[in-house]
Image: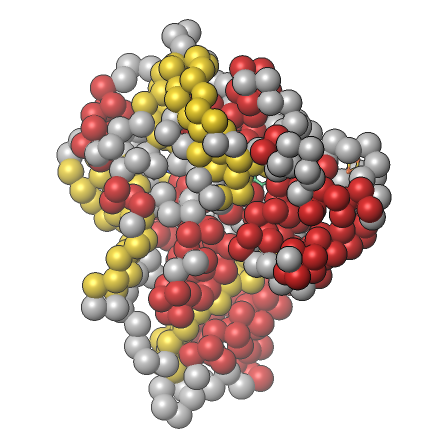
Length: 158
Length: 284
Ligand SMILES: Cc1cc2nc3c(=O)[nH]c(=O)nc-3n(C[C@H](O)[C@H](O)[C@H](O)COP(=O)(O)OP(=O)(O)OC[C@H]3O[C@@H](n4cnc5c(N)ncnc54)[C@H](O)[C@@H]3O)c2cc1C
Ligand code: FES
Ligand code: FES
């Protein structure tokens, strides 16, 4: 199988890589670019652990091909903190203990950030619907929702 | 597998027509990538159609909307005019999957995947949408209710592409709605889906209607008898009873883990009543 040469931007850095046409963006992020923050929970679009933002749209990276990254701008969990300074959402997840095993957390954070950029003042119902594609086997969701609502409040005040 | 992302329809058709192996069209990939992952399909060629401009546009010429096949749920939901005129079509597409899936899932992909439970299809049938198709012999049009011929099967030839869906002009007092029954509130496949589009006159009498059902037969159905039950009425109790009975009569569903034949047949009538009332109120 011949490989495809792809040039893309991830977290504002330009990357070039070779990939098979069957590799997903999630495979590429993890295996070619060593960005292992995005997780594979299902590989079928159901769990959201692989969530990234591509050209401003929240997507499951397991449902995008690596070759489709050509010319796109991707944001992953690795771009969320500013060096050692955590994003308010990340800090609130720690404060509210909104994670246990942590597998879902990168995807939840990326999704929640995309929500707050679109809607800085969501209702609890809006947060729950927006995050319906991010499954968590551990927390029961309440702490996640509280952390997101609290982060939204803090970010609005800032 | 070879991957191509042509920028013109002509180039895409040429690629599809020119391959000796198996080719698949890639839109949002939310069905296709799942099938690839499960080894349910192993194409020699993938033709990504998202770079073709005509498939990515929404146009409105004198009140006639045309929606490109590669428009996603998120994009359609953000379009203020379509939502005003065809709220049922928009809600059908927006029900698909999560926020993440909405960012990718296209209207043409939902139609072409040809699931009997596809959520936008009953709404498209109710709306009397026309499917515009391009192939080596040029363009042709298919009424949306004729498009799917069975589960996973469409009336497209292997080198044909759905370009867009076009909608008839809308009267002043006209609207549509779509509802599905699922056991949860989000992220599930329709046990029954129902789309209704109707028009009413100044006195509140329903003058035109189209009723469509999903997930109750091998493909989504247009149910003229259900429409006839409400045309000429103001959706009084008797008309709604007749509508529900006609909708249930049209069902020939399967039994599966999500719903029995009996349940689906009953729910089709219940949903038809609810959807008709929503469309009627919106139209007023
Ligand atoms: C987590 C999850 C939840 C889902 N929930 C729902 C749901 O609630 N309701 C529902 O109806 N569906 C659901 N789906 C299925 C899927 O998202 C939809 O059917 C979607 O609309 C498919 O669009 P796509 O652009 O991703 O299609 P793709 O996967 O790109 O294509 C689907 C099929 O159509 C063909 N095709 C695509 N575009 C064209 C075209 N223009 N011309 C010719 N052939 C074409 C492809 O070759 C393929 O066979 C879900 C999927 C996932 C992963
Ligand atoms: S790994 Fe992508 S949605 Fe589960
Ligand atoms: S913290 Fe374990 S899955 Fe969410």
